[in-house]
Length: 145
Image (tube, rainbow, N blue to C red; front, side):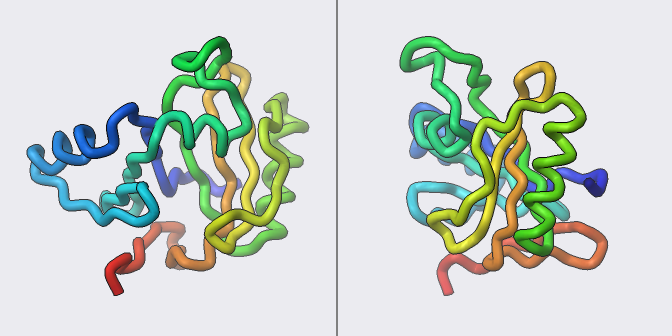
């Protein structure tokens, strides 16, 4: 696994309120499918509904009952679907708990999730719609195009 984080996703309770907050700070995002993406240097910062993020990560949302969901995930995007499988296996071998086995995604990619020993969630994803540059940096597409 290369040493980089490509996306940080916050699970928010009110997408419009959170988007407005970051826009007030001067950030400019793009909304696509009830998700707001902000280019942040060579990575992306993402706002998504907390319940949707928990469900997508394969864990329970403590706001909805009990569980260990902290309200955000870290993402590591890779160049091929095979890399997703390789990294999930390596993470499990290193002591992680796979919370969502790798599978095709609703956006046409392939991804799975694991929790590190402290319960922090990582998504390992191949997203053919996101440009992953040679140096590992991410360039978001123009969602309006």
